[in-house]
Image (cartoon, rainbow, N blue to C red):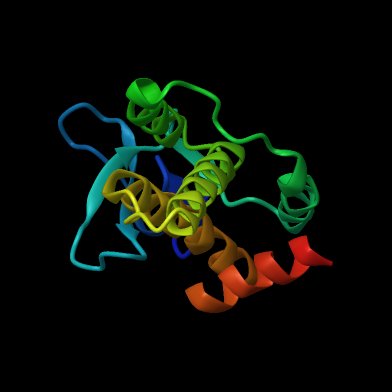
Length: 158
């Protein structure tokens, strides 16, 4: 079991455990979680909830960084792309987030090269995936969000 003050990922959000208590109605042990991106939100989640996972370790982060170049872009028809973004976002693995980031970034770069406006849909999913991934990386490295982004970029380019 985790402790008060620990950070975990619930769904895709990095959260701090601020309390651990038993629900008086059903006697289930629950974590009280506060997402680091919204301090006004408190959630009581059963400790055995399948959507809770530990933050990635340094080894897992290094492995992810090492694999980023080999993670493929999403290859589906444009009509199915948003459905695929949603599916990958809901699965919420860091591998999936990188796949969304790479795909949306490259699609928008191609549009800019062709003197077209970037896609709102691609831009929205790019930002969501970046925020989820970099918030976790920032917490693992104990740095701010922008530094986490720069850390990934630097290490991928080396």
